[in-house]
Image (cartoon, helix red, strand yellow):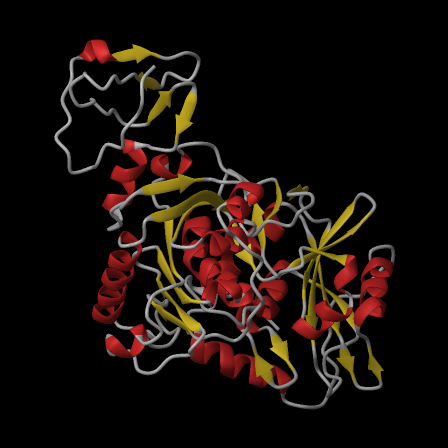
Length: 442
């Protein structure tokens, strides 16, 4: 074999089919070039072998990126592992938190969009132009959701290997070409070196110097500017908002919950964040993101451990009621469980479906599906008051109570007399969700 030369996307490519040799097991095309030959015919998903060396070049990948507005200037590196990214200059970035998240495409009643369609369109254009100006870009394909039955394929496109090192660890592995074959994949654009004033320049106003995150649920697109990739919590919140409608449409129930695993028993837990924090070492995953699907449980984001569990033996809904109206622990019917799940009551505040993040699906529809799942699979459910006056329970004590409850005969829910908590529930839920099913009850 002779020397090789780079073929630009803009060059005219013509050659006889005799220049394309049939490859081996993977049915790829091997193109051999001699300096005296005419320009190469580049076929989709082409790998070049020159003098026994593989050159990172794929016409199919470049074409796919162009369809997302990114024109490869020099090279696009696909699915590099950690050591390869570090070889390209990746370093572990310092963690950040609390960066601005702008979202458009909320469900009706979920509040106004925080970024308009014209502003997002303008921002996306600026970001894709910026990434296109970078010589080497990095691409990673993965999935949100550990079960292939209802996961969401994701393509990350970044101008920086350090960002890719951080973000790729959030996603589950996915088969080759899965993104291109998915009906509604997510696209994440990462522009670390774009001008810090990008937000102000397109009319979004002054943003954090460290960067910001913008998501468009309708477009299934996410933009991370500046150091936003270092804010893993906000990035995951944005990815969850984008993925939940797809997961739900594919039959999964995306839930802000965690699992308590004890021997062969799996318990699905809904609780305030402080309760989760205080018994973190007993729960999986570290982030509150679980998918309940037809015959098991999975996780939104990479956990580094087991990725799938069987259906839960029971569900625990933790409430926080210092008035004492809610008993310390009680058994719920599926309709009651859906009602308290939808309310998410925490000492005077209601957090629908226990989700403090951005809503991209209707909480009522999620609660209905949750009730049906409890019925169909005969999953027991319990309500637990973590702030019952003198009997506050937190952390490891909460986990112990959950485990002991499974072996006891717990009485049905019966609100204690006094107070107007039931009316508060009713008033809040009917104001947000007027068409509550009859089976939903306090």
